[in-house]
Length: 244
Image 1: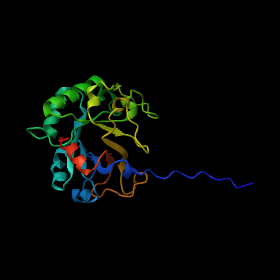
Image 2: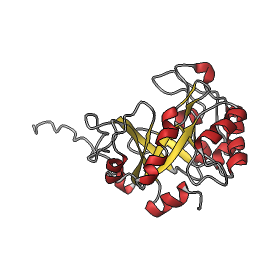
Image 3: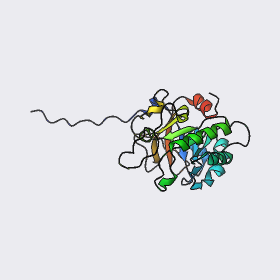
Image 4: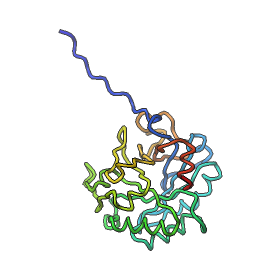
């Protein structure tokens, strides 16, 4: 009898064929030592958390925003706040004082496990996006897990949002920044026709905790989330600067 043939593990994902691995996102919990090293790690875009709903504003965002620009990295805020009044106030603190912002804006749409009452409802998210569009002349991208976007609880966590985004929602007109740590991202139903623009494929990566199959570690920061852009470097610049 032939010896049992153990199954061979599948090869790691070839993310280089799926998008441009050149965007990270960080928050005040990340220690930034040198944005020059970030740029030397082939990072072209840095997204920084600006707020946690109505709980707090991330002061590190405003302090750090000019630094990536000087190092040829883009800088963009993640904004999460229920209601259009906060949309206007967060916009003032995270974008240029006049004209159309030449940087990416993002709405972080996820369950707030530390303060569930501060999680966005669908109507609040839509009002927020509308207010941002009216104030800035551009739509933000929407960061969301596909399960939450489809109106289901996140497996294994029990966390859920009071949302089920449909193709008719204004949210579906925004670029999709999908959070999915599998080998390829699941596309929420609302974005089935357009797909993703950014894909967060790994969270809290550091030199001691690299993402699966990742050989290039981002230097200059203590840790970061990793993201692919669906396009090349020229398309990333146009997308970020709202010229495409």
